Amino acid sequence: MLSADGERISVAYDAPAAPSPLVFVVAHGFTGGWRRPDNRAIAALLSEFGGVVSYDSRGHGESSGVTTLGDDEVLDLDAAIGWARWLGAADVVTVGFSMGGSVVLRQAALAGPRDRETPQAVVSVSAAGFWFYKGTPPTRLLHRAVETSQGRSILRWGFHTRVTDREWEHPYPLSPSEAAELIAPLPLLVVHGDQDPYFPVEHARSLVAAAAAGAARRGVQDRTVGWIEPGFGHAESAASLAADVVTRIGAWAADTVSLGSGRA
Image 1 (tube, helix red, strand yellow):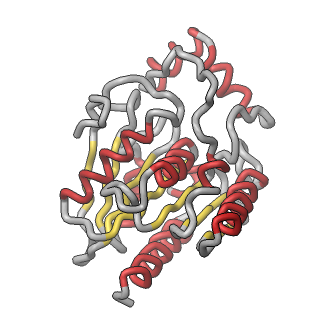
Image 2 (image 1 turned 90 degrees about the vertical axis):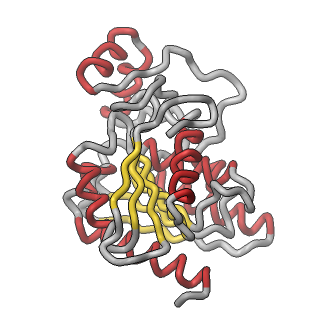
């Protein structure tokens, strides 16, 4: 699979447990990938509700290029959605974790309402609400890793993650909260744990509030739902240990697209 700018993107497909027009497209977090056990566990749970397309974003795993930490990764998600459509998906729901949670928001905001790559619904799990956050020890460590040559070497050899050495310049990419403002009336589910060591729940609340404000400003329906999950940690590592949360995400997605398509 190729992105619009020519990166080779490694992709996988898990067939649904029963025939379904729904396909989930899963965007992993930083240093993640579709082959990791936590991602495989999530795909298995979601496949109870529809097919699952998983992929390595650029700079990760078997994909080419370098990660831009959520900027150009929108093109990878575009390609994965296009591949899901090629497989025959009538309904696509994007599900992103951490960095991927930001990517699904930005991709939905940047896609036109009639674009082939526009999903029917979006699920953002453990995403940051805004860029450059350094308010917790893990985020400060992450910034040191991606901003130094030594840190990038450790990420490359220890985590199979190749990070760009180019800093973002003005104008910065659309932030997750700015993206959330533009998503309505597309259904959006924001999931966040109250034990997230990276991003406190204020990040999720900023996304939900931004989505509501954007819908009100444009006079469209706000179909955003926010779940603050007790005891839930961060992204895929938490989700793979919380089968009930992933199952509820799958059920929400299936119900939401069924209602939207008139199949309920």
